[in-house]
Image (cartoon, rainbow, N blue to C red; front, top):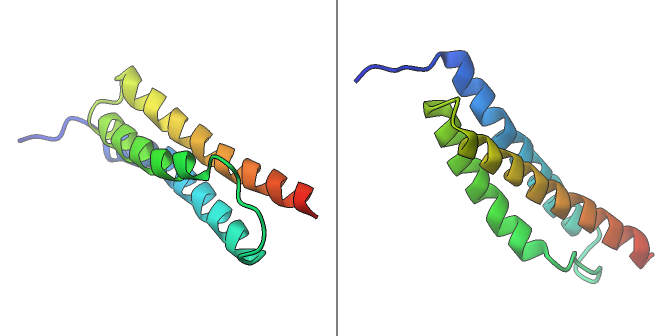
Length: 97
């Protein structure tokens, strides 16, 4: 079995996944920072469950076939879901004070 993609393509493929995992970690850290009594973003479960799945599947597809549009769409969806959770939690905490 030969590898058809270059190593740089693999790094580029996993970059959106790393960005979405970082945004999710920041959102969870922001939630934990203010303690258990603060409100949580209403759609946190959808974002927290969907973003890692989209990021992983999108990165695997893009790493194997960089010209596949579906992989890039899944990677972009993962970033959007992670940013939705991060910015939604930030707004929720800002409005709670």
